[in-house]
Length: 152
Image 1 (cartoon, rainbow, N blue to C red):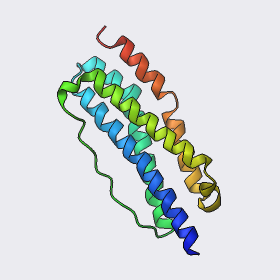
Image 2 (image 1 turned 120 degrees about the vertical axis):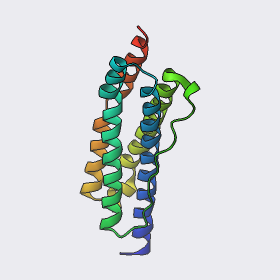
Image 3 (image 1 turned 90 degrees about the horizontal axis):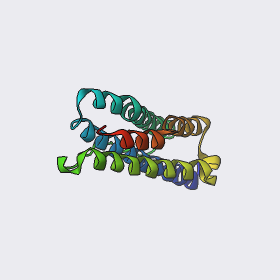
């Protein structure tokens, strides 16, 4: 493998790491929101928002680690960030999570559309990116619906 291929693959991996970090921030924020909800609303948040983001985060980490392993690239660990201060409130946590999910999705779209992903990515990487985006599809609408009905 030439240096340029290795460099391009590392660049892909780093971008996927950034998207994964965004999903980690979303997950932490949703956890912060969950802590402030009653049981019924907490279960709704978990089913509609938390579990899909958790699946997407897990899939992103697995895609990252498998790609790094296949090409012996430098990988890093992922730390779950703090959700923030409780005074952020449920609405603030959910809006922050939504912003982080949208940032992750933009990163994933850019990766999927990049010529680098086509040139030096592989089938497994492209399938992983597609799967993450599929899991996140519709999440923004679910979050907005949750926020509209929150507290009612």
